Amino acid sequence: MSAHTSSEWLLLFCTIAIVVFIAITFKRMFWDEPLKHGPGFFLGVKVSPGFYEGEGIRWLRRYRTVVLAAHSILALAVLAIFVSGQWYLFPVWAGGGAVLLMVTFLGFNGYTRATLGANPPVRPSVAIPLETRHLSDYISWRGEALIAVITASSWALLLTNGDARVHWKVPVVFTYVILGLLLLKVIFARISLPLPADRPEEHYRWMEAQRRHWLHNVDIFRWFFIIILGGYALLHGWHVASTSAWLRWLLIGIVLAIWLYMVVSIIRGGRRLTEMGRDLLPVGSWSTPFRPARLMAPGFAVAFGVWFGGLILLLVFFHH
Amino acid sequence: MFLTVDANDKRPLYQQIVDGVKALIASGDLREGMALPSVRQVAGDLGVNLNTIAVAYRQLQEEGFLRVRHGTGAVVSSRRGRGVEEQELRKPLRTALTQLILGGQSDREIVAAVRQELDLIRQKGDSR
Image (cartoon, rainbow over the protein chains, first blue to last red):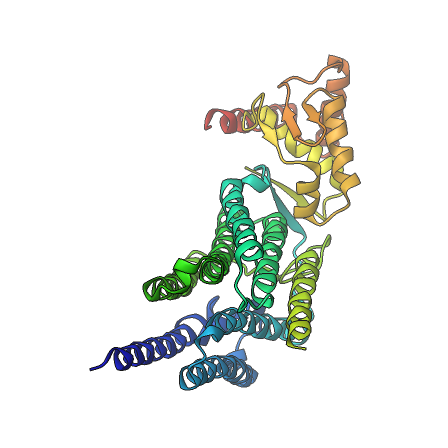
């Protein structure tokens, strides 16, 4: 078997592994997501008894179809990358895929809340946690400093030694993603949510666990792009690296490993959170006399919209 | 540690917070030097205006229970309020006792109820 053929086999293996992974993610993370709080809820929206014997069947089918469509697009895209051999598109696929799933899921959630959950139950009693929360409890400034150093070094390397093949959209878009996600992290760490007066301790621990889970996964997602940015700078700014096949494979391996780790972390963390919150009130499933029921804080929704819109604009700008 | 506020309660929201913090201090759950969340955090968690919480914190500060440091939050400063005469403190007790008498309770029942409430507050503190 020639070296060329073994590379192709390796890529085929990776592609199949990714497609299998997408199927597992779909089944484990998304398939039964609307049911995770029991038959009294659909995607965290309170429903009447007997819902799943009538209207609920249609809602469940609609949800699964939408999410399956998003996963199918991801699977077809990775197969297209394999067939065309354009592996440089893999980071775009991974990043875009994560955003596609998030937007699809949140979009369906928003639609469900606007229709099925338009009149959530009101609870007059609200608990206030007296624990202080600081930004430094959630964000490691040492880690952020390391990220800043890697990002700045990558830019310095590209600006001083970058070869003629440098596509500037890569460092620009990736830096935008890395810095923009820090802003979203800060907002996410500051999000406030109402706490029901019954079992406040359990609800609070569960909400905090959710906050830490998503902050952790956003961090993994950022490291995915940081490694690619650093690797891109090395391959295009350091002539020794640009001719090194093993370094290229090492970078691909690290990037794949981070991506797999992120998926595993999301699945395992999600299962743990489901266990923790099985009989607790889902976030945004109830309103208080002081605030309406919301899936996410308006500030976070606006910031995410601005960040995502900026990303699209950048991609369109560089495409032309 | 949690405070509970109820929209059906006749007291205004800020007063519920003041009373709740005082109860936690009295029971020993909140001790001298312990930090309370910032006005912004409490207002955000409840979904109310910053001013509502600021008024509650200001009252606790004026009564000598809290020390508010700008930007860093509030700290429990003392278990005893300052500048409040015993006669002042007795006023709400007198009002409550009047209500109990008017409610038809005997002296014995009232003393038992007061003892029970007092024990409840002390027990909470001892269990920490």
